[in-house]
Length: 421
Image (cartoon, rainbow, N blue to C red; front, side):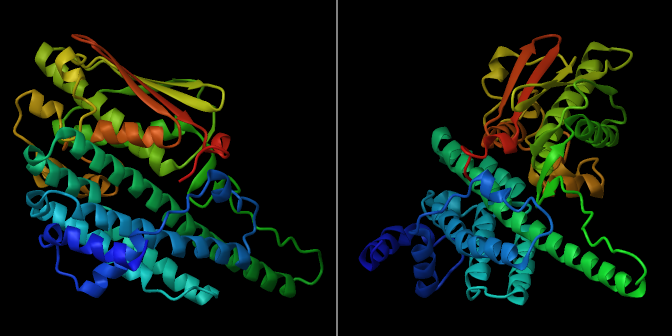
């Protein structure tokens, strides 16, 4: 984009930008300069190319070169996307806060000089890790903002903005967290090699094995032999505990099917999706037990199935199902069954705090569970996460009885040629 085009863009958006934190003309010109550049998608194959241990200095410098160049461009595009929203939406404190968080992340990361050595790489990695933590609460914050502003935007516009925000956030986190994990992995390997080297000097009588015994199933944040059954057990325990904290009671659950099947996937994504689905199943089961005066809660059945390059998960509950009217809305942002049932409209604070422990509140902020019912982002976000790597999420309700939820997750390793982030 030419300087003339950049200036034209600045003038056209000047009125909208006034509602956000004041920045100098120089600052905005820098943001527009980065936002005008094309992103360079990275394939899954490129993320997995460092799977053979041990990692080398060249591997890490190659990873940081792409990460340092790409993240400021993507962050700048997010900043500019806020400028395009209606004035009254931008005045909302929650949305303005998220805008400021993205701007500060861009401002911090773009300021680094090109990285040529490991010391500079480590400094950038630590800054990147801090910025990732600061952006942890973006989703609950933006959810509250759009809940308060939904009357000022068309549903299609709101959905398009949120979808793009979440997709870009997934990409940002996959790229950023992948490098952070590789950087830590590299230093841990170097530390072990150094320690073993010292041991070799002390024991001069025999051959030394200097191979690194780190779990080769991990490549940064990707686990190439993830066990869905084990993950479902862990998520089930966590959500069951949250349900007991919130309601004082919780149904049981069990996992069956192809319990030894593995998949190549990002565990934190798997955990987020399944925790959201289990929260709905647990809450619906307890609520329906109260309404129907059942003496006990029927257990939730979690079935794992094996497919060609994917794993299927079916979550079956007896929570009363979903009405046809509500079924049309379950994948809409800012819609919650709590509101449909006549409960008070939740807020970011009341939804996360009511009856919840500190651990549960932290879980919400980290995107791995959170309150048993929230701000209407759970199911649409879970479906978006599932589809990001070519999977799907479908719900088959039986009104008056329960729901079958079908989750299909494609193995990341199986889609190396097609999927780009």
